[in-house]
Image (cartoon, one colour):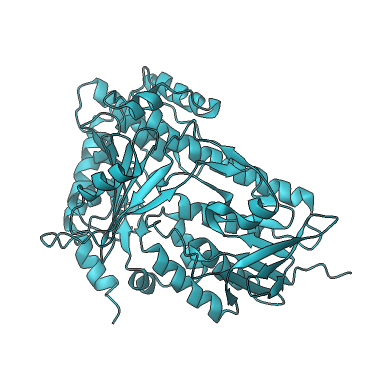
Length: 503
């Protein structure tokens, strides 16, 4: 049979997207394939993504990365979820935990019994039924228990880390596995006259680099996917109007040696502010809508709200929420910001890199570039981004705030039919509708619905047939979780023991 294997892969761009791709491909394509990555130190990367969600652990484990070394090399910390402040109402707060709320104890989902208890006068908030919240509130961390009988098995975790250090760490791994790095700027992209496929890139110094498969990790500009192939972009800013961010790190407060094991998102007048604690600093940023706030004022507002001394000047980032019309076009696959952008409200930027890398491996082409393979890749990628988009829109749509123009706008805006269906189902009977490959499982949707006071008008009809009073069980659950959390070590102590600062 004719050998149609791809022999040369070129990754355009470094940063998290480029080096995550290079590291994973170098592991999967261990033989007979040359992998080259082109990046320019002059161009640099966005590098402000510091919060992740639990699937990152699978990515690291697949690469054979030791958690201790990873945390030390990236100045990382643990993350149990996200605290949302001021999203439902100005003085409200709730927690989006990683993992479920306890464990179902009947045929009817557990949250239905919480809703029933609430109608009967119970005042314990939903947060108190999540092990991740009990640990986060106490500033403590421990790894989940392998014993399914323990409440310590009912949570998950992710990481905060320095994205620039992570890229550097993965670069070391990728180069050790044979990836060739080329420094310099790309001056031209050559397309085949008949097929329109990318044939090669030409560097500013005249070097020509050929390949058969090209991975575009060039960031917002999309050097190949958009610059060369003119793929087009679906604009979602009518649903997600925030289009700017300013980022500024700060020092940890001297009086607080214990970094919080969670991300915090605080609603502001024209957007929201992130707070992400690492070992050596706190990452901060203000995501906002330029129609309601200018960049200078946003930078001033951010600087005035830091927990410690600023460690640099504010960095501005401009973006447009949306996605490429095709993630895979001809022989180019976009990974990272070149494929689209969703604001980092639920820490999905690095996950979307990981997701497209996984699809590349699952649907890896040969030199024929079967259109059916490409179409399946795009179908999955488009659906995944749409479902994440809907989850982020949910946070805005459910706001009850009327104190600023942005919040009045998003509360009144039209939303995608796919999201309207999920909201309608929950409002009727408290039912959570899950769809194909939904990254955020029902507990995540439940956290936002309840946290932003979207309480169901009715209840699951099945509960009326059960004859079960869940109040006692829920009370025992809360007590067991609180007792377990109190026994766990402080987050700072875990970091000091697990991931000491490298010399």
